[in-house]
Image 1 (cartoon, rainbow, N blue to C red):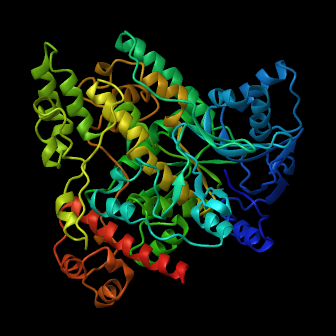
Image 2: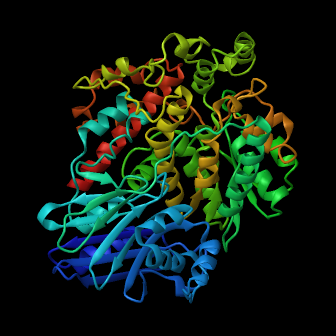
Image 3: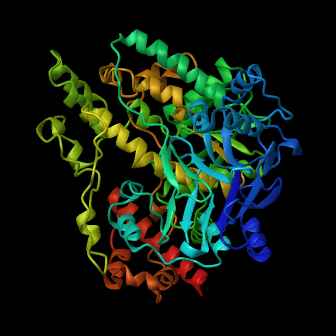
Length: 612
């Protein structure tokens, strides 16, 4: 894990801007930094900047920019299958001077060009430059685990970086707030943010996941998609499906544990992180250390399940009690580092866990990001599954199974009818719950209906693909990366392994839920490694807490701070905001909205300071 940045322009990058940019990359890469500059054959000036967090091959021989035989690479992430690729490339005559994945990536590119992307399993964002031709390529991994932001400044060139604060250093200016993105955040929440690669900064975009941007000297840039996940079910029994998943899951976790530093696991009371920890410890025999957040609110308290998971692991565990003091100061720190508001309050808790991981001397952590989206774990997934199973002979029995499992915990009113998507298959009102009321808080009322991409005809799998590619997973990966990098910790997501995900999307949907339990294939894979009390728990667990746990909105000092003059009130009606602060916040959706308002307020104030 590292930080990368670059600039392609008609004039050289000033030493002052370069120095500021490098300084802003330090938390992404505290173990070293470097720069490279060149003049392309078309006369344009190219600059590369890199900061290193050493995880694999800790020797300085793997420092970047990495130069070899007329190629230059800057790279952020990990290529998990680098040992296998090294062996394959050596058989073709390629020679290596390092033991890490950086040189493997460069040699793979020399061997296969753009086709190298099909060979890579991992998380990555990189820039690679061929000195004789002047061709520059920027690329990003399949799910967008590693960020790469672009800002086209027209005559002043193109800048790119792992973080927006580095872009602004290279550009010497701070763009305005993107008003549409802010409206989407406040009204529709995080699921409306990632569909068109916008950011909170006008003109700044993300390079799309699973794409490469090819910039040849003297030619217009072209965007190349190299991968697209699709649902291609193969006929198989549930036992055959389980066998395939078990093998792919073990391989995925083994790959993401490859490192030359100790490994931390972010352990909650849920299935996802417990299967990772159990597999690492019992199947792969590795030493790990677990870190867990403890929330006192009974609605989110996972301490009993965490204790159950730890009982069979016999590993060190650090438990973090959520501090009730200093929340606003920590949130300001997050916003300054995130270059925007955290997209959900859960990532305040991830920030706390990452801080503790860093304090205990770890650089690497694993978590359960993506498991719900690939194994089918959300409350609405069960109803989409019932819609696909409506012709089954035992359909009424399946409905009764839902009532005794997920159905008893559903709070969203749109998801309390087991036939919801049989009666109205196109209805997605549950996704932007409360949006109409939230819009009334804005100075300019905003409405944008939910839009679902058509990836396939299977209603459940299409929903899951939208979550993977456009909605939940991109948001989680965005905040996962930043919450870790604030503390120089690399977060890895074993459930987003390419081969595991492709395996799961080849399995008929009917096998995803068995014995009235969603995520059945993951639960079964954990047998013998994770306590049954966790594997058989029908209630969805997850790290969360209400914002009212951290802030007393009746405190006059807090109210004075939040209601003081601010450009925030260009977006939000001050009177409505004031009344909301004084109201009873009981519904989960209202608590989430209050957090969004609070975070947006603090971001707008921070942005105003940057522009002054």
